[in-house]
Image (tube, rainbow, N blue to C red; front, side):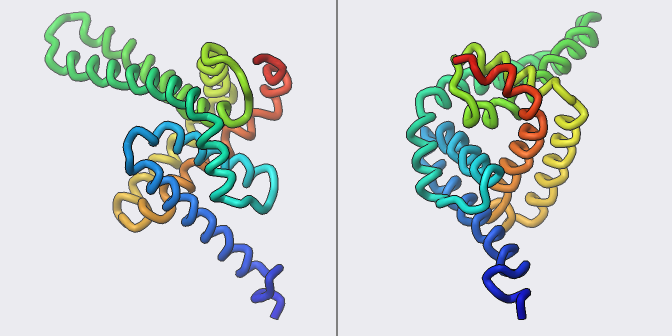
Length: 205
């Protein structure tokens, strides 16, 4: 039957599941040394980008290439984002202990900054594997992409939240599919915006 052939639907679905699982496990293994988490994240999105551009990708070789090529920039970007996230977390903790009448105002401002931070964070990896630009331009562009068609970004947050809850409920998903599927979702949403934004910014480096 054609459905079971190499061009059949079951075969294609099986290959997609295999590739997502392979990429997810590869990413987790590369994160074990801890210090390699940042370039591994960039490599994860690099493979996903190739999936969006063409049907077949040599997962390991593409992952290795992106891992090496983006080592420096991924460390710079992720270190800055890690520091910002720690600062925001500290602010929320500080506010929980605060009794000042300005607490609500400070809380709203911090919440707004956190929202913008998440918007930028969801866009920085798709941009990093799409464009060769300076770190400053990368940060600015990531916020621009996050704000552009913001309903798509909010949709991405909601789906990611639901996917995270599901994966925590069924823990095997974390090991086999969570990171690769999450990266694909984030890149897919960003890719919907790139058609309009990349032509305007792609020439900058």
